[in-house]
Length: 449
Image (cartoon, rainbow, N blue to C red; front, side, top):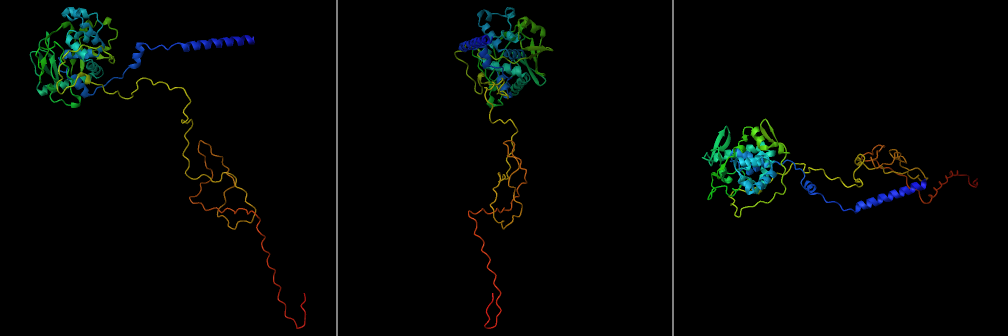
């Protein structure tokens, strides 16, 4: 039985060894494109822009009519859908659709109403795709900082009015609503889009380190021979598709977007939308999820002779997000490789510093003094004991000295003289005592002993 068990164990170990060698010999599978994209582009933390950055990115569109402006800002929070809409409009059959035919063609598409409504203004969709970095910055700002974004639009409109470069015209109307400025088409059936130089229309720009963005008008957007001046120019007139217009307008006092729910639902075709990332509460639009950035947008065709950049402005690509706040690492750090624990990490409390007074000088029994006479001098205090009775100090903690600390200046200890190599010579015998002097005798007598 023992031999049978041994043979079974040997066979089992051989099989396991063969399997491990086979697994090690197989090549490592590369990650899928989705896994690689997720590793290179982890979920970002919400990006925040400064007021100066908001001003410079909003400068090209802050004077757009209110409803068109809200459509641009909301659509910018769906950058991938804007790319899809741009591709859809490149089909000549789609680009030629107008009115109800356009509404019917857009109905089944799973896009946000803001994107669908912009398709009625194909040049604006083309402009937002051509300057995609700026478009994505707009979307991130409106999703993460809607209140501040709308407040900076009113700040820019106030500067344009104060500079005296804008006024109501046959194309557009400026309406005061308390301290806020509303802009609306003068003709409810035709929309004219303002075209202007932001470096001039707002007067002296407040921060030259963040100069305003200039977005050149797309081809066939303005009349031939249009000259960019200090005031407002206008695009060609666009016929308003009423089914795609008027469903959302700004509430400037509360910095909100008010939605007509019935019209919004009809445009949305909500049964085909799986992840809209927005919510409508009390007829108010709100973005509920961060903007999903498009990492590698497809290239777009640019005009052979682009419009010159006006002095005092920057290109749309100049918009850069602010650095993320700490912590800078938003994903878990890799676990350290297994290995011995660092030697420097103590597993017990750190020992206190070594006392500054000298350690006892006697650490072993003193040698017995050599025999001889007692020393002539007597020490003024008792000599230290011949042996140290406290235990030897351990590495941790520091040794505890149990004997009294030595005085600041101890009296010198007179040690016995060392024993001589040869015994000292014997002390000299005392001289014999002198005999008493003899009494003088009579003459002739002998001295007796």
